[in-house]
Image (cartoon, rainbow, N blue to C red; front, side, top):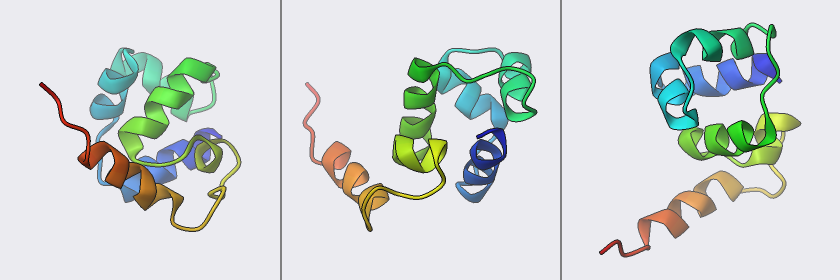
Length: 83
């Protein structure tokens, strides 16, 4: 999973610090996850998937659950009114 996490992050054009911040970790702790020295906890994986704009299954397994799933999540978030 560490390799997929890094690949998805790089393809999204995001820095380690951006994902680390979204997960609530230091950059050092996040780097340990990407290098495989530390496991990604479930809640952290959910937060990472959200920050990367991908589905958790794509992050964990490497393939989206359904075609177009990545875009569907972005549409849902875009249509939410925040007051």
